[in-house]
Length: 100
View 1 (cartoon, rainbow, N blue to C red):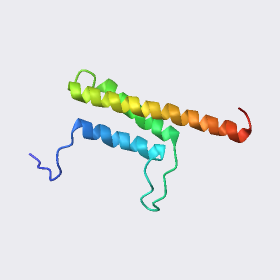
View 2: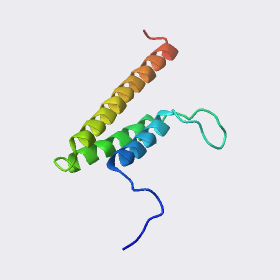
View 3: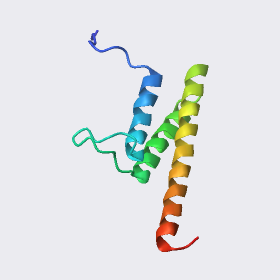
View 4: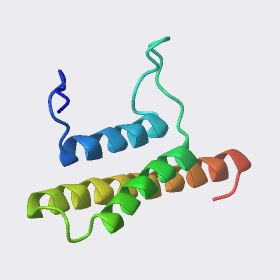
């Protein structure tokens, strides 16, 4: 049997790691090399959200109630943010283009 020096990875920790990937793509985290705010990549954020949605579908019926709730909350928040980010981008494009 293999022994790991790292602590055990939980399902919720795995969800957080995928959600962090989405946060990077939303531009929430500063670039560690420059310290400057990140650039938004909404396609990348959407892909990270889709990975979480895939995880939700593939694990249906195999999670604890707490894990189901946590994953659902994370997905709802990330989806909401993606819709808002797309709306803001569209509004910014209209403002630049001179349209209402």
